[in-house]
Each structure stands twice: as C-alpha cells, then as structure tokens.
Image 1 (cartoon, each protein chain N blue to C red):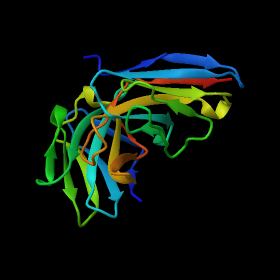
Image 2 (cartoon, rainbow over the protein chains, first blue to last red):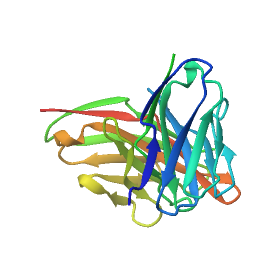
Image 3 (cartoon, helix red, strand yellow):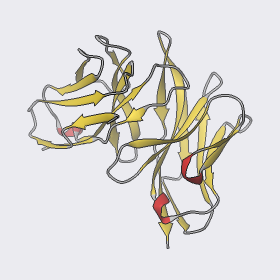
Image 4 (tube, rainbow over the protein chains, first blue to last red):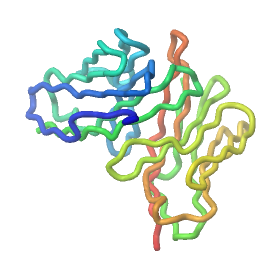
Length: 114
Length: 116
C-alpha cells in the first residue's frame, strides 16, 4: 500500500496564478482532509470530506476550493494564489470520522507564491 | 470547543537523557488525545493515542504518554533520548464537528533537538 500520496511535492506560483493539489489514498478511507502548516502555527484544517461527493469547510477555508469526485482522491484548488498561501500543505485520511480514528498523512506539498 | 497547548516550542536534551514534552488540552467532553511526530521534510506519523481505559499509553520508538484528567494533561516521555528522536512533535485532541464526525485540533508543535 502506498498510503496517502500527494502531487506535486514542490511548486512555485506567481500571485494570481491557479493550481490544483492532488491527494490520493489507497486505504478505502471515508474521510479526507487538507491542512496547511506554517511555522509556529501547527496544522490548521482547510477543508475536509466525509465521503465521495461531499466537502465541508474547516478552520481556514478562504481562498481554497476542494472536490471529492472519487472516494480515493481529494483535490485542493487555489483559484488566484496569494503570497499568504505560501505554506506546506498536507493531506490526510481516516477510516471514518470517529473520535478515536487516527489520521494518516501524506508527505506534503511545499508551495511558494511570489 | 477543544484546544491544545504545547509548552515550549523548542526543547533540547542530551543523548541518553529523559525526554519530556508537555501538552495540556481543553475539551468539554472526555477527550481522545494523540501525539504525532514529524521528521524533517516528511508528513506526520502517529506515535500513540489515548481513547479510553489505561491512562498510561505506550507508543512506538519507546515513547509513552500519561493521561491525567485532573491536570488536563497528556505529556509525552521517553526515558533515554536517541539522536534519531530529533523531530517536531504535535499533540492533538479530537473534537466533535457535527453530523456525527470528529476532527483533530493540533497544538503548535514542539521541536526536539538531541545533543550528542
């Protein structure tokens, strides 16, 4: 099993450009999440999905959109990138949304917006 | 709403010394607590978790944590630090987000350095 994979690993954008980050999991997990990690801030939840075809907002959703057309994939989109979106983005998945369920993380995508 | 406070953004220990990373939580319901480790340029990996039952939880790589309800704490310890323990550690609490599902709220992390 590959677990949770993310593409790309690195990306540099100019302000105003758009891009999509792809997350894939092969564990048949129902729940998927997108986080951003900034120095001294820990991980903050951007959006999440409780199943195929569903999405919901997290703590910091502004400037991002997501889609979950297939159960194994969760896409994070930036329509018009801003320097404030420079960050490391992590995707995670969990079997369900139970309190005891651990989340499995991908390796991250390092995004720089100039 | 739940929250997590990790005391100390940076902790340095000598190789072979005790590792103690502090985590205090706030939760309106009995908490489910997690410790994750992040090695440089990698994603997060679960070290251990507390759900119910025994308050002393053992995890991977010799780490353990004790849930103390009276102190609202879930500190992470390891008796003897190894160079390979150098990483960033995150404490997290599971909180209800509605519609029968739960989310993790993370602390800001503690970076552990191990001095040879």
